[in-house]
Length: 291
Length: 172
Ligand code: SF4
Ligand code: SF4
Image 1 (cartoon, rainbow over the protein chains, first blue to last red):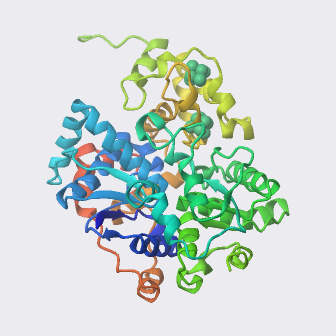
Image 2 (image 1 turned 90 degrees about the vertical axis):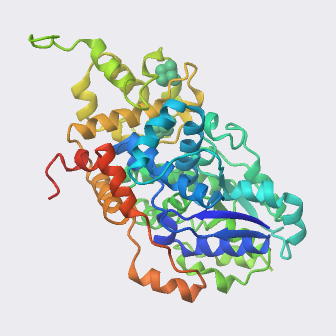
Image 3 (image 1 turned 180 degrees about the horizontal axis):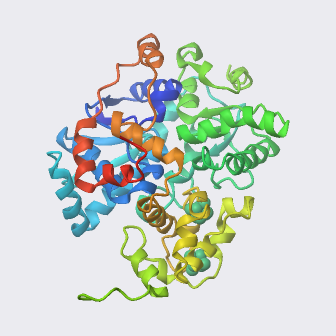
């Protein structure tokens, strides 16, 4: 059995038990063991990188050290956590001077970054450890009536030079995994463009305008839902539709569904076990199409 | 540079200062083609923001305008520009470097101060409500493990993070 240290991050446990639940259920069903390690912290995402890059790098490295000590690779559900940790892991492995600098900081916390573990996003585990064939075989409720607008979020694919996740201009992994469930991954305008989420709380008007574009583009392409991989994109697009209603007087009712939820549903998990009530935009229209 | 006062800052001083920052190393490669601005979702949405212009102002030595303006805070860190820049300017990282500098001057947007607070007190950016923590077992989720906030505190004092943040006197 393949085991990973599950890196939960901050947003998922604070606001999105539905993401955590569906990911745990799906990965367990697919034969991946998740280990919850003590003492993990925030991953040091963009808002902290904005305050101090060096501290952020040290925090990311500290968390990787915990996985190194447990002799496990890391899997993240949040795309933001993936980026913070994967970039730190990459930079520190490649740049001995930076590694020495960060290790000097970490020594104060009794840690040393060695650089012998990998940081993976949930999708990579599905793609590489589980495999598309196994997923296809295990699907009991194919989503063949569902048209899905895939939205991976920025920090899974960019900067590609450091993340090496997928082709940055023509990514395929997410679409392949959606289609493995029997659903159709549909093209839509500006598919790879940011959701604006990181501007929430600083420039809410700009953030909402960018999110609205995304919703409209998926809507115009005839999507039944937008599928996300990042709790922050989810929040921006799901809660965002409540704000679009009050600000723009427009209603799209576009369900935002984490890929882990689609996966769990297609693997036969009872929707009642998935805490779907955490969605602001109701998911009923999607559930109706999964018989 | 012995007893005499330093000379007045020149244009180059600011770019040199930026290139010495983590993340800022590549700013001088920019040849102002504008690919970044045309790839930028924020610049497409508001004229308050243009990454090419920020870089231009920085390279022209407009330190005060760049570090005190609203503009550097409007980048959504989506890395689209960085992916496409023909000169391999690490634009999103340059913006981080500029923000790091602005914060050292005491310009901290309220939101970021809040994040830093959460991190320093709990090891997380977003607090977890008692309600949700209790609910976890109803959903069949394992209890949350404690965070390593004590270890983080040692990291903060090693990098001076706690001091950067308290500089403005907003905190005890
Ligand atoms: S794309 Fe690169 S070279 Fe062109 S203006 Fe932007 S930063 Fe400068
Ligand atoms: S990283 Fe910032 S500047 Fe670059 S395209 Fe995205 S929002 Fe615009």
